[in-house]
Length: 476
Figure 1 (cartoon, rainbow, N blue to C red):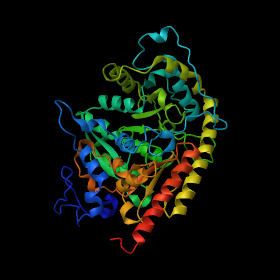
Figure 2: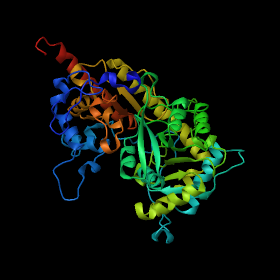
Figure 3: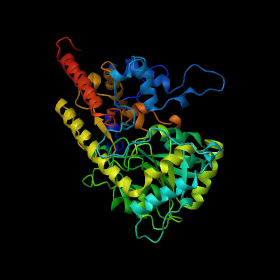
Figure 4: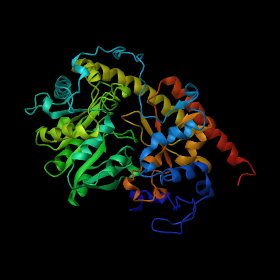
């Protein structure tokens, strides 16, 4: 059990208000090292996640997710003044330039129709909803009797807004989520009281794989909604068929599956042929199977600034998701919705995904080679996304945990995200200093190659610096 939960690597707990180690307690079998009990970055983390000085009505802990917190710390080191001199490997964003061979050029100007000056429907404009439905039918549901229509699609202003809309319409349910997973689920799972969030730790030994047996086990104990990213953030691994189909068979008529597929185009499992992986492939009836798929222009179309995303699912779900936008976010920018329609032509998307996969696989292979050359052990090479879940065990002790490694990288103008942020902890019910994710960081190879080279050079300097430090005869 301890190996599955990952507690073997965490030996202590810390009072996050004072920074003082707590007495031994459940799952705590030893004393903290001075390294973690007193370091500046650990104190900042504890302070940020317990709140700040009080202002009337303010809960400041709601204001800072993992990447935001990391960017704030980088800003203290001059990142905002000279961003071009930094390698930001923390931001979960792909390169947005038009110089990837084979990719179509993005619009530089947008025609704004008279109708788009008006309020748009909170479920999105019908032509874009039709285009999304057609894309999924062509790429994932050819020759299947049940086809998506525009009524199975809601357009939402970005992935986070989509997640919040889904959360708003869930009933009184147990919602299962996996550890590790996407940091923004923390807020989604904390804000609403209409469901209870249940953590499901995955095993490091097999790359945090989601096995069908694990899904069956969760449903058997009463979980009726399951949310996961797939392809998976931060591990860079994907659950593909036939296992994905088996998971959906287990969930059918028993649980709602929320499949976050923002990285579906970053798929390296099929020789970069442009194939994307989606739960849409295994849906039997688009109006009966309780499968909600969320994706958008953000990642695979490399347009994170547009804030155009979509949710596919049964009409009843989509009607509720569309309506709740009226009190949550007001809907998606209409001119950008109109501009998105021609991008979703299926043959164009297939070519785009082929070019994308070749380009990002090349970047992945470069980074993996550099990191292994520095002495990092990478047991599971990512087969999707643009992330590496980088294990720090084996590094010199002062940088063998995510927060201290992050701090050391800032000194070399490199940003990564400490793994502890992916140990989702809605409402802060668990002590994260027992986290199985503590000795990881997420490394993004989303940026351009020159940024990746700069980042790898900086990380290599960090590793060499601390190897030299710990080998010094006066090091204690």
